[in-house]
Image (cartoon, rainbow, N blue to C red; front, side, top):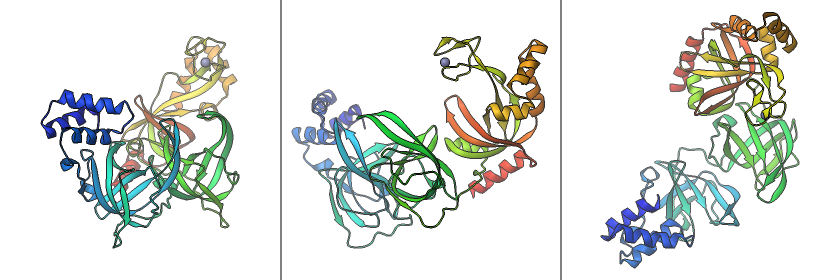
Length: 422
Ligand SMILES: [Zn+2]
């Protein structure tokens, strides 16, 4: 809730001028007083008493961001620990998900209340704030937590053990059992100067996901089978990525982790709706091979495709020849732009960069390369696997595998959609 909305709400509750309330609120906010606390002070100052600030006891599904604070009786589903920088200080917070019979809600606890996943607890005076468009509980200094007399029955898994396919950005306090498929060490400019991090790819039986380890754990090596406890999930280029911190526990597993060698196959609509996927397969018809395909030139400094010898960042440069395809793929549910790199493009074209240059020279036209690719691809049905990212300009699939499909794409997509909707 913003200051303006809060001021209006207080003004009408207290029967005084909104501008006056807003000025009071703003002067408190300048001293970094949280909005809820500021509102309570203003309420007290104007004789509003505790009346409207007494928290109600609610089921989770009736909590909305219009409430200031609530009392709930819940089961702790997950708990992750993380250090964040808050107003210049490192603060260790605990965060995760709570549930009752009516639903779930995420929480952030600004101190250690001593509860763990599986505990049934009564939470008094938890602040409600909006996080990612949904209400979230904020457990701070004025919050009380005690054990509930009875176990709160929930129909959600407790403890945070998760398959990779089920992880979503915003998930916290999760545990995974995975094989490390790729890992590289990088030095980055962190908030405390230069620091080394690991990044790569994790796999289990259900999916493959990128990961970042912000506090490198020595057991993270290519081929290692690991149980990793307390990871949090962020969005990375539109797909979920697994994040390890100093609080993540990494244990080698004695049994190998079964891993998938295929990507989940989805309809394009479903994949795009997901907002991005690290590893996905779609089957569709190539409708069009777009401009900027075939024989192209890249900037030698940044690798971006250049036009007329001009890089958008580096100005006039001596371009390097390369092959690429941008193909629009349609499966009847939606379309995606498949971006096919040098090697696969050479296979599809039936020749490498120097063959393409020869052909362009003979015809005195670069476009003959793209035209040859068009003749090969347009109208055909293909199985396309890669990383999907979705932004305001549309959906792009960076292709890893590209093969002719025997099946009818529209029928496959309809079947996939029907399965999802069951
Ligand atoms: Zn450049």
